[in-house]
Image 1 (tube, rainbow, N blue to C red):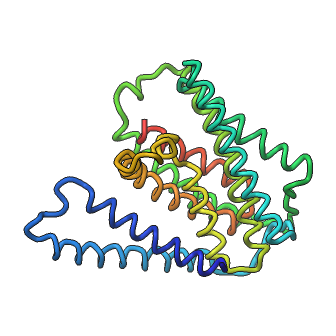
Image 2 (tube, helix red, strand yellow):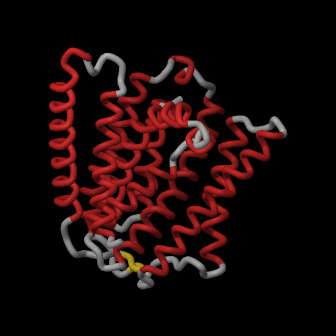
Image 3 (cartoon, rainbow, N blue to C red):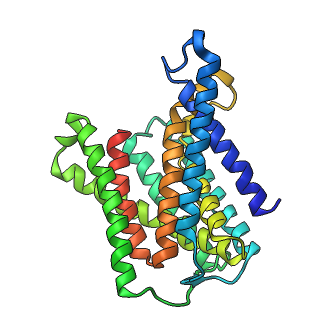
Length: 290
């Protein structure tokens, strides 16, 4: 299957998921006017996705390439294997700790950080995945403009999250927040290395469109954030529907953030910028989904 066909299928799946997420909300569909409501919502979702993809195509337009691993499909496959391995190890270790009754929030976060740093480091060290080579650097003006837009958008997102954050979260001790922010920085940097520096760059090396490369890496980024409850509920259809319904808005938001970060990577080629922007986004996400 070509990346173009895969992108089309995933776009349709995301649109269907968005529609399902809306109609599954209580009070959205009045049984008396269900048919009309469905038609209107389908139209709204279609317009939303058409506008979103138009903006993404415009944002990814251009030909400047800052990084390249020059390994093509082989690199993409190995990065996919790396992601599967780190997620599998994280899930397996989590189940073991859960059996011993020691899987709390701190342990889960530690497992996540270990998996997302040590596994990629191992793949890079043994040469299974190749670190890309910088081809050129963005101008200072482009870095400044891109940085202002990226960090500004992330800061606005996190500020909105602060406004609706639980009071008890905002009253957490400074020490707790310093540890949390440190974790957010490490996690954001690791995810950017995997999904933008490695995966997005490898997809670009395939010679496919920049739009498709950003979109596919963003969907992979969103899927990576699937909660363990979604995997654990695979044996029960009602539980799976409940978990999927709860996760769908977060998944769609993560795909959108992933696309935004992908555009920043295309436009700047700066690891520091995308890691910093991602960290600021994570502060807002941590507050919203506390």
